[in-house]
Amino acid sequence: MGLTSNKVLWLAIVVATVLFIGTVWLWPRLSRHHWRAVSGRVGLLLATQVALFASVGLAANQAFGFYASWADLFGTETGQGVVVDHSVHGGGGGPLQVVSTSEVPGVRATRPERGGQIQKVDIVGRRTHIATPAYVYLPPEYFQPQYRTRTFPTTVVLTGYPGTARSLVDKLNYPSTAQRLAKDGRVQPMILVMLRPTVAPPRDTECVDIPGGPQTETFFAKDLPDAVLGHYRAAKRPGGWGIVGDSTGGYCALKLAMHHPRVYAAGAGLSPYYEAPIDPTTGDLFHGDARLRNRADLFWLLRHEPAPDTSLLVTSSKAGEHNYKSTKDFIDRVQATDRTRISSIILDSGGHNFNTWRREIPPTLQWLSGRLADH
Image (cartoon, rainbow, N blue to C red):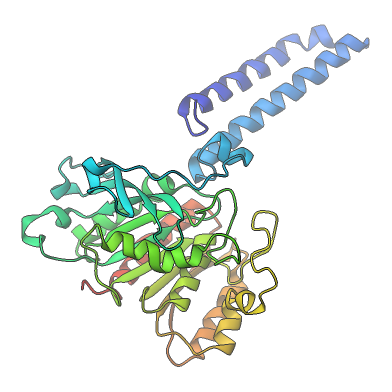
């Protein structure tokens, strides 16, 4: 049974409940002072606590999508994935292969021309050889005859670290939100390409081209757009692509839009930070390369390099977010430039969690839609 399986969660809850009842029932018999009774009390309390924490942890993981599998949880997932040729779906041999298709969760329509479609895909970078799974949302208009020659604005959507790409579909509800907003006329129909920034698991590469390691920035700036453009009727760059993410994905979105404004005309960071951290999950990202380290610091970039011609959006909360002060500083710094445009969503209260980001996603998609062209 998988880590995110409901059976695993319910099994943990049942075990915790049985142990709690057993502890209450057996406690009088274990109230004596000899070593067996003491060991029994300690064992029951310990087992009950472990089962309780396991239940809470599994429930939190299902709600927030931290880990996708047991291997992901224990750090044993080290491979970069296997590229499988699914020529029956996608024409074989290309950098993007469609693995399966499904309906959009939360949308009451079975035909793609009415409710859109989710495609699970495998992507391999021609330059970087990075291989990663992703989900692609195609709006209903994509399948309608009157739009058969139209290209669609495209937004790359990134999770945090470690994150799961599926959580963007059925926890943060990007596809159903985009479909609803387009139906109401508040956004233009757009393609969403949803994936993790963690393209070399379990390492957190912070979307950096690591010397001698994964070339993650090049993958997102060149390989990913080329793969999507070669398979879908996505808008031709520049001007037709945006990028959005939360937490680590938010930092990546801002950095990619600032480093590659001719690729991403707009970048939105939900609860982002502004400098790549160095910790056990990242390892040595820069290998002594001062220029690479500096360019990964968005404040340094704004102080020392020409302002990029792109649009940025950042979000935070006055209470509950640790990035509030740095976000205000970032807004002030961008406002002092002559070419970069900045917008923000500042909530009175929120947090670094899915509930807060779900409140910010609809206006973020509207903001993106207003800055992307369908060409």
